[in-house]
Image (cartoon, rainbow, N blue to C red):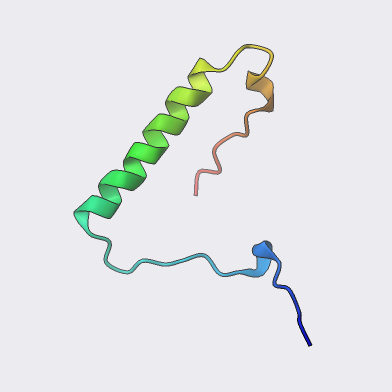
Length: 54
């Protein structure tokens, strides 16, 4: 029996002790996403999802 797992049921990865490089990269992703959101065309911007804050 082959049952596909829905992405919403997959537990998020929990990194217990992230190193400095991983933290730096994740902060860079957030910063670039925020810059992208600010640079969107006014007609596209309303379709950009709000940050989840989690």
